[in-house]
Length: 316
Image 1: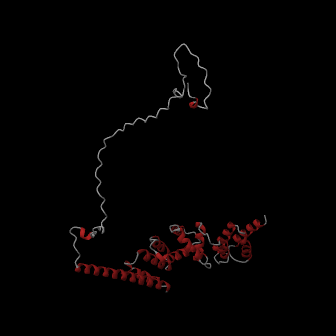
Image 2: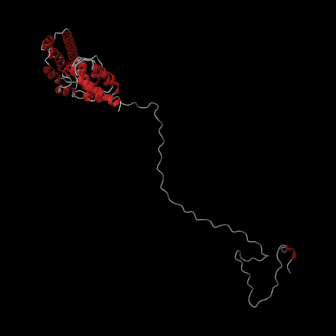
């Protein structure tokens, strides 16, 4: 008999036992083995001890103790001067240094004297030109003092003197030999005479025009723009004509300048001004042309034709 007090109150009622022909086999359970309800639960067995593998590692090298930084860091060795490092180079004796210094002083004095002589030469040449004595300028420029002066400036002064002597072919040859980068402030003196020559040729001298073309455009334009705004004269006319022919007359009122030229006494200048005003086609020149055509003077046919052309343009 089984003691009822030991029975599980929550157990399901047991099925009736029927003997079988073979030996008893407990029902198979997929999750745990069969245990008799009366048998006590077995004590959990200790997990098997894991086998620890010991590896033989090489011994670490000994670590040297860190050295403390020095209290006073070592200073870099001083760099010796190049003079000491060069073998065989001795200190210049005091006597030699004195001689070298004296030579430099003498050279500076000579250079200063040459500069003073050059300025005196140029000032004297300019004074002769202003006094209307170009022949004395040529004499001065042929002296020994002129040999030590810059060649470009001597040639510019000589060209100016030849211009005043009306030796214009020689003037142009001297001007052609001038180094334009070294002429300095004498460029105006050089260009003024040639602009006058060009105006006297009424802008037809091809040799002078070719020489003008060798100048930097900005340099000759700036100088000739100043001359072109002056009162009518051969120099003014030459500068104006070259600026217009070369296409560098920007900043110059051509209509105004050619209208002013209509009042010149030179018949050729009046005719050239009238033709150019007709080509420019500005109606601002119509009234001045009609007034010039109605007044007595030379070149009237050209002036009247220019006036009629602008009148037809005004009244198509």
